[in-house]
Amino acid sequence: MSGPSSTSAPRLSPQFCFNERVLLDFLRLSRATIDDSISQNLNALITPAQEGFDPSSTAIRQTDSKAGRPIDPEACRNFKDNVLFQSWQTRSDVLNFCAGVATSPDPDDPDLILRQAESAKEREKIVDERLDPYSARYFPKELRTESLANLVRNQRTVEEIIRARTWSLVTERCNDSASTWEEALNSWRQRKQR
Image 1 (cartoon, rainbow, N blue to C red):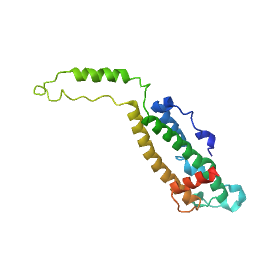
Image 2: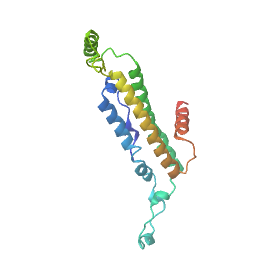
Image 3: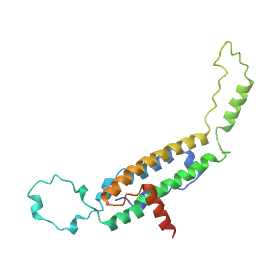
Image 4: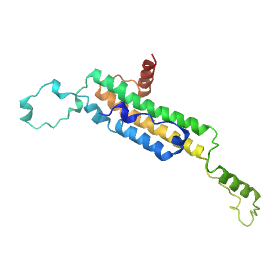
């Protein structure tokens, strides 16, 4: 089973957020270790040795899966509190930080001078729209803050989908209440603050 160390928070900085490959790699790795392998993580909570070995179990082929077996409620609670919710909170913190970076001014934008020069050049251009109606079009390059904002928005949508899927498996296997993942995560946050 993956522990909290596998999804430890990266050192947050604007450079981390603007490096989209690193940001996406962190999110993918965190999701892969917890959410994408949720069935394996939940199976690891079942301790078969508690029942003892039954020699008659080898007499016939076992075709039914142990997936239907309920998991110890204490093991489920520990997994949710120490692994699942911790991972979700770390990813939320990263996305919130990067959303803040995306809405802040970006004085270190390496393309700022180039964009300003292109914009000035376009303003000076004399266009005869009768000869070429499309020549007046100017599409400035997207700011890296705009690109980051789009990425964060998309990743938040992905998070909602993944968390809903993960939570449905957790509630099914742990015989948990029918609360939503949002309610469960908020409840965990409140317990953690005490």
